[in-house]
Amino acid sequence: MPATHDVVWIEGADAVSFADGQLSQDVAAMAPGEVRRSLLLEPRGKLRGIVWVLRGEGVVGLATWAGTGHGAAADLQRFLFRVDATVAVDAAVAGSWWPTLPAPDSATGWVGERSSFRAVLPPGRVPAAISVGDAPHECPVPTTNEMVLWRIRAGEPVFGIDVDEDTIPQETGLVGEAVSFTKGCYLGQELVARIDSRGHVNRMLRRVTIDGAPEAGAGIFIGEAAVGTLATMAAAGEGTEALALVRREAEPGSRGVVRWPGGEAPAQIVEIPR
Image (cartoon, rainbow, N blue to C red):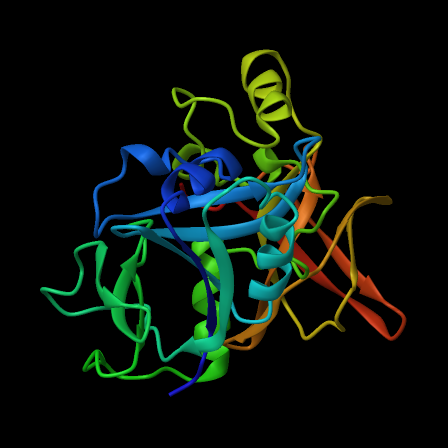
């Protein structure tokens, strides 16, 4: 089964309080066994990682897409001073995930320990499951293209591919499920709160449907205006679907073209349901 996630483990007497001060989610308010979405930000409020928090007793797991765990761990380790906690990564160990889950596995949560666990990750639009060790899920495993297409349609960005260190949290569309506005201070909180109260962002993560097979990194145009660049792509029927950060004037329903050195194809901007 394909390994699609890394898991960053924070362990020690201060694991929960340390995670709570670093992440946008209210980790301290979570119950053991609960799973919630969260963001990892740098001090100025820009994005450094997208995670699912696995709250435990004296341990906090951060599930993130494969290949991004070491970066998230390095960011956390920078702030491990005067803290009784350690940070370690189990890279590419989360055994499998599925875009549809049979009951009773559709309930969000996790059970087990570092060496053997299973978790169902929020949000509930399309549940995903990961498992490690002796805790497998008995579900069909999709092809790579099916997994990527599911991620595109669910609006699940990968840090370093669809979003990066220049991305503002509100641009991801994940703030509603990943940020607590009632918890105490956390790293990068000021920018998130300021934009929520009196600002707006100039880009948003959108789904793009294309009548053709563009090259990676193709530009998106509405009229003659460049509004974005294709990121993750997957074949969908006779066309292609993609994720892209597009300028706010390219509203859902807008039609345009995708252009690359070898050609162009009609495209449409599609809103991601939240």
